[in-house]
Length: 137
Image (cartoon, rainbow, N blue to C red; front, side):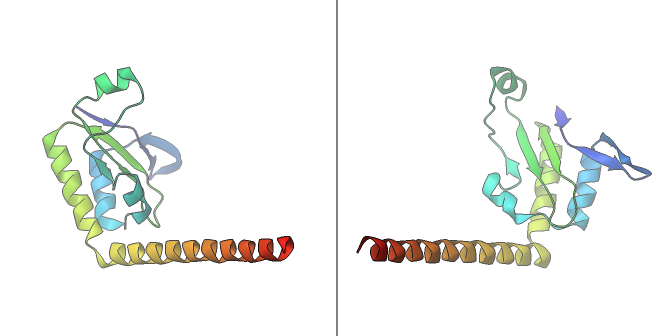
């Protein structure tokens, strides 16, 4: 069973969305850099997803979920499958994408931004502490 929850734009009529396909997702994985922020949310592949409803737990028992987006290409993908061939193909394509210099650089940039954000939060905290010390004597 393979269920694709994402849709895609019709290239001939981009204002229309149509059902997505594994082949389209594989083409995008070969051509566009994944957005490394998705590493925080399952790393593009969840072999043991937790479902919110009993119906979903039953329907998707034993399934793997692939989901994510691309860095500079708006094309979200969301696939739930228990088909071993589909799992292998998507897993390989994601691993190949993550091994590219473009993905490695995007990951480095994301980590640097997050480090700067944490540093700014700490500077702000220190300013608030200093202000409180002055205000409260």
